[in-house]
Length: 347
Image 1 (cartoon, rainbow, N blue to C red):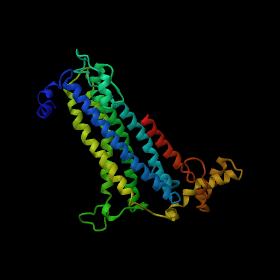
Image 2 (image 1 turned 180 degrees about the vertical axis):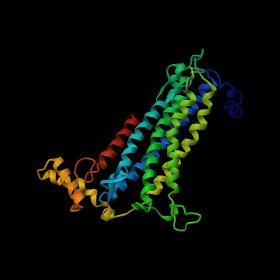
Image 3 (image 1 turned 30 degrees about the horizontal axis):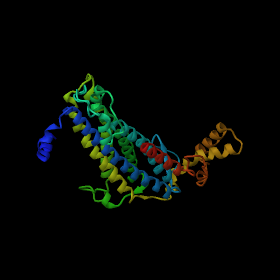
Image 4 (image 1 turned 135 degrees about the vertical axis):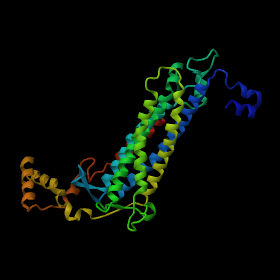
């Protein structure tokens, strides 16, 4: 940095090190970099969030099997499915905003970790560099090396978990055994020997990269375990761990958002005979509404299933009205929560 400035400005460039250390200069640069990258990631998350909410509303009446233990459980819908991932992103956004607030503190002037004999105006440099506040204690400013990266990694790991789990659903739902969704051929990959194959390679790679992102906080933690206060060269290795991961996360968010623009969902899925028992809970509830206790109704429907006389009504599930159910997706409430987070961040 000093060499570049000297080449550009002459002798004045040689003064850059006055009242500074290589340590706090690097600490500042890392925080400026992380702050900008977090803002970029926030924008990409918001784009994916809006895409998911649009799909939730667009397909809110298209039924989908819900599973527990990977066994057919209860009626769901594509509206619920897409909306669930959108709401998951609100929690991820909250972590990103918290990470940005922690990162957005100015360490400049801490020197090697013990301040300087020069009468530095650290509040002025904080304002000029656009930081929210400064790291007040010079020792802590240096201790923040590695900690800021770990906080960012935790936010990225949470987001990686959402992307990975969502892509696992996509891979399952694309398979012939499920057959709930499709993507155009140019979003899938063929087999080298099986002409019929349309592999979900894109989503498998996002799943894998999302899982690697979840390992980031632990990797950075182990790098810093048992280090005393003060600067140590171990911190140099945080860059090779975190920086490539940031690029991977941005790519995953961008690609997934584009892919969802061309997703096709299947209709009439629940008409398949294998889903006939998915409405058993609805049958129990109807008996409860008619005056039976839940336990009595449960036994009655269970006996009907065992004896082969069970019948089901495929329309009753659409009568759900409580918040977050098939008939009440709370789309606007989820969007409001995201907007509240963004407004809080601006404050």
